[in-house]
Length: 340
Image (tube, rainbow, N blue to C red):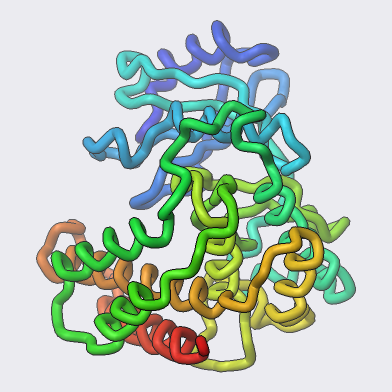
């Protein structure tokens, strides 16, 4: 099993995870350039989930297992649904890289219009409302009370992000895209006042949640590797990137909402504002920022493929990255132009 030293990991599980009974079987759930996720099944049928950095990755700070485990453990003390955090191993002698283990949560990752078929049409509004309610609950968590007050800087989140991704664009761009530069300029000029400090997930959407499709509820929020402290509205704006607004050009392959039956993004904003009391009049700023950031990320992937840094390119559609960057840049520009 690539990525798992079965003998050593099995011994660690038996010694450190309560109720873990060897022998274990390991099944890769998700791989690629992000963290690798394995479903672990014990001899008694009990299931766990193990997360480790991608193979060959050397920048431990980019895939900090202990940090991710810490966040899940802290959030798990609140009403926000997350998998139970069961243990973390920082000894690289065990598996070649740190890893952590969490409880298995049953559910469906709704990461495409096709996957939406698992959710009955009459439950799609219910599920969407719970998705935004969970986000509101996350943003209401007292970061000091749960022990995450020192996780990151608290203020100036968007300002730091705009600076970071502007530099990233200059370092990775393969061509000039005036829309990227115009959006960056407008983002700097129109910087909003941060409305408090919250746990910011950084990648919040249906595709990073397990949904109980029988009840129309989020069973667990996953993928906390980008989590930090910052402006809660960044998460709200980011969700708008992955919410179908009726424009065919804005459909994203990993967004289930084009399947239909889901409420509008505007109605989610209204629900969030009612629950939190936050002013969302500048939400287009955060949608623009999120589209722009994703455009820069997409360009970075495109550039690495062009330069041969991503290994075997067989079956990779480079045009999709190129066009994707351009589409996100134009969407960001449209959003930032809607600001008064």
